[in-house]
Every structure is written in structure tokens, then in C-alpha cells.
Length: 119
Image (cartoon, rainbow, N blue to C red; front, side, top):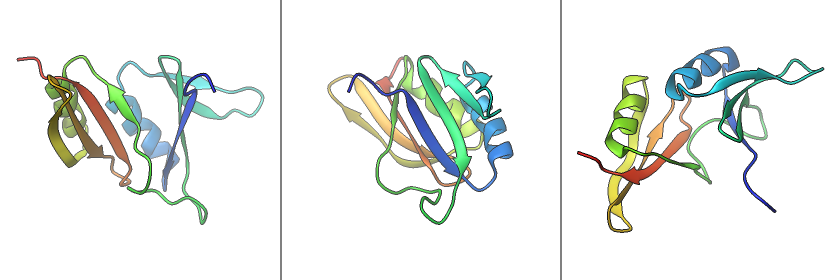
């Protein structure tokens, strides 16, 4: 295994979630797979794939959480809260100067943040 290439986020409303995640990740680029027409967001080298929740995988907080490295922890946290996210866990100071937390999206999925607190 080399690196993470895609993250699937399961939601009940894909169209609304694509809009929300484009606001939550302002540097994300909307891309379309061909020939399927599947829309996803590219965040750096990672495909952020918003997909329908179903009987096998529901939306919500359960299991693994992906943590995004951020340059300014408080600024990133404030941005997600302003976009409609809800603080779920933390913030906690870890590894010396680093902080971490989890924010829930409107569908209950957790977005992890990890980075320095810059004043």
C-alpha cells in the first residue's frame, strides 16, 4: 500500500452533501469520472467521494475517522462550524503543539482535524 487515494463519505442526500463539502473544503475541485459521470471532489491528491448511504453502510459516526492536517487548527475548526458542522470531540492538545478534534457533518459523519494552534 502506498497512500490514501480516496475517502468515501456516505450520506442520505448526495446533491446536498456535495454542496456542503464544497463549502467545507473550499480548495476542493469538482471532477467527473468518465464515462460514468460520477462526481467527486479532489482535495490535493485525494478523491473525496460523496456516495449514497444504504443498508450496508449508513451515514454517521462509527468506526474510522479521517484526520485532515491543517495549518491553523482554530481557523479550520471555525470554518467547519460556520459551514454547519458540529463539534463532536475535543479539541484536545496532543503531540506537544498539535491539537485535534472531530466535527460532525450534517449527516453525522466525523471529519477529523489535526494541526497547530496559531494565535
